[in-house]
Image 1 (cartoon, rainbow, N blue to C red):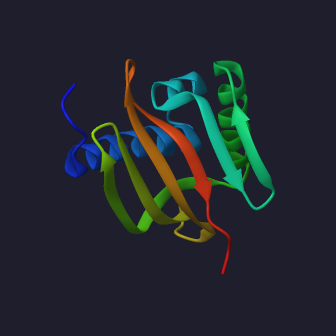
Image 2 (cartoon, rainbow, N blue to C red):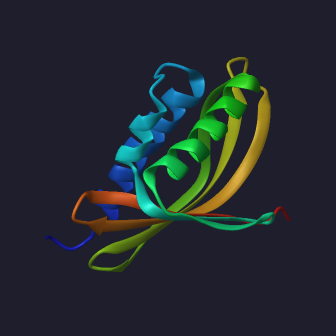
Image 3 (cartoon, rainbow, N blue to C red):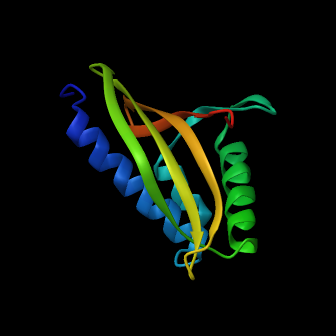
Length: 136
């Protein structure tokens, strides 16, 4: 397996983000598609707590809940306000970014800052952890 490179990891992340946006907006309806991007197990950490999702059904359920909430809020797209990809070793990178979630008319739903741990394994690249940063 070739070593992880920042530019390639960033392109992969952009592909993931495009699918995530399409799901949130409703252009894609099969939330299972996100499993092409999410690792199992997967760690999710927020101020409310940290959870390890240990199987594909748990990952799918969390993704479905998030997509349903985005659609209910009138979500249209996410704009990356800041972002940086850092390679940690041959098989792991992190992408830290701040996003604005927007409606079609451009009004802001929310902002979110998170770090995504991207790993390279037998199944290819996957987001293995999402760490949502505390609001400042």
